[in-house]
Length: 201
Image (cartoon, rainbow, N blue to C red; front, side, top):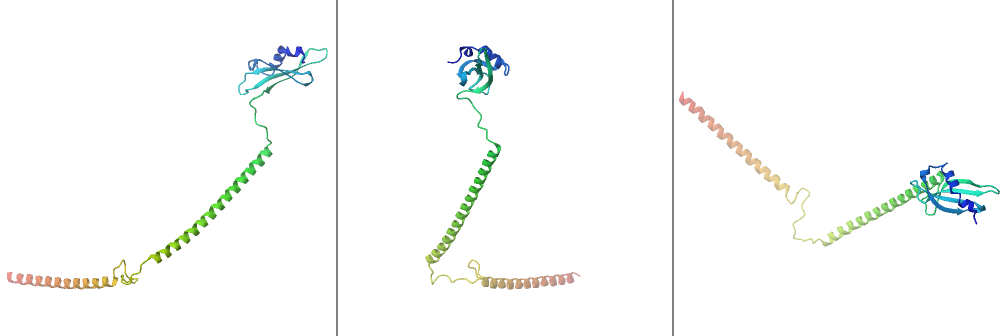
């Protein structure tokens, strides 16, 4: 059984707490905890923000032939208190980070190799498909012996260039004859004008 004097030493515990924290941060008594070697810890509510589930704790003990005395006063977490994550040395965190980066780079490289292989397979399939389609078209074509003969390389869209050349020559001859007739008409007009001028004089 804990010493009754320790359970009743709230004033002594509050006096010790006020030396390390403002009185406004100390709430109502919240029970006690029995520690080894006859030590008793008195708990007080914590009113500070950001520390839910934490308690002001004052550990007391009784020495033979003496009054209760304060061993320690501090802010400790209770059950379900919000705690900071466990501290991890920087060297360990750096090693984990480097390992994660290496794994990500390897995964990216593997994905790129897979995509390249897929592209090559797709290109081969396309080539095979083109050759098959060409063969099918050649097989399906119906070559009619009576069909229009294949045009020579000088023909464009079924138009015989030789015929165009001949028609151009005919047009050129017609233009030259027309020009000669026009010149003759002009000369006749000039001679008529000269004769008319002479008669007027």
